Amino acid sequence: MVETSLALTQDTLAPRPALTADLYARFLAYLDARPKTVETYTKALRQLFGYFSLRGIAQPRREDLIAFREELKASGRKPATVQAYITAARLFFAWTAQEGLYGNIAEKLKGAKLDREHKRDYLTSGQVKEVLGGIERESLGGLRDYALVTLMVTSGLRTVEVIRADVGDLRTRGDGTVLYIQGKGRDEKADYVKISGPVEKAIRAYLAARGPADDTAPLFTSGANKNRGGRMTTRSISRIVKTKMAGAGLKSSRLTAHSLRHTAVTLSLLAGKDLAEVQQFARHSSINTTLIYAHHLERAANTCGEAVAAAIF
Image (tube, rainbow, N blue to C red):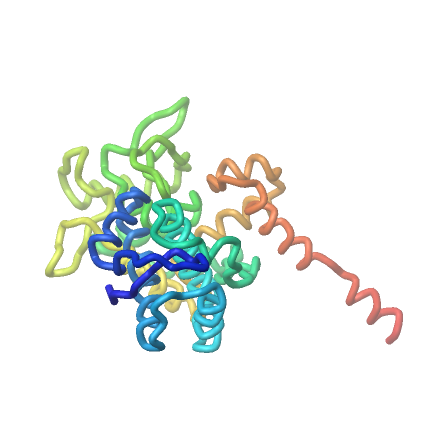
């Protein structure tokens, strides 16, 4: 971390400790954040204080933070990245003010306006059939990929939820089979998704071909030489899904593994399921997220343009 002298933003600025690794460690300990969050904040604050250091800013002011934000935007950083960096700055300076180290110059500082439009496309039911129909099921790898894709596209699982799944997470609830999952931001597998008959059959076929495995073994294992039989990574799942989509002629930067989750939610709404049911299915913390999907479908179904064209032509 670049050392930058920080002092209270008062008329008389008392000398304060430099921003050292120890001070930053205290900030992270205060947050008690997850490793991924720590990684994000570390990167963000390195950028921020590197910016201060290069410009000789020893006692940053609010306008310096605003200039940093505008430079991020001008450099082509994605709005989500700008937002994450400014969020890190807000949290840091709120903490320094609380600790009496520096005034909160980032209070209510705006980040970047995030587009509520989905960054990924979804597949139509016909396209899903094309993708699944193109996956061979003679080899162990083919059986795995077919089971993996069918699971993701019917349950709306995220890639991280798939790699965390173990064989023993397949359990019975009511009159059906479910898969217990460790969702995003969760510390344990307290939630589950229902598994339909065809999906369970595909998973069981893959597990039977793979051979005996205890309950703690990964539900889906890697076939790579360096990690054969080990737990898959989100990158490997993303690569598999992209490859299967490309095999069906679906090549687009907007089609990714996350598109399968979008597909599950969208097809649920198209099937006539109500918002509350879809929210529960998708495990959206807020129904506003589910409403974004519904809004997109309403716009796609809007025929005003056609009506205007019919009246004119």
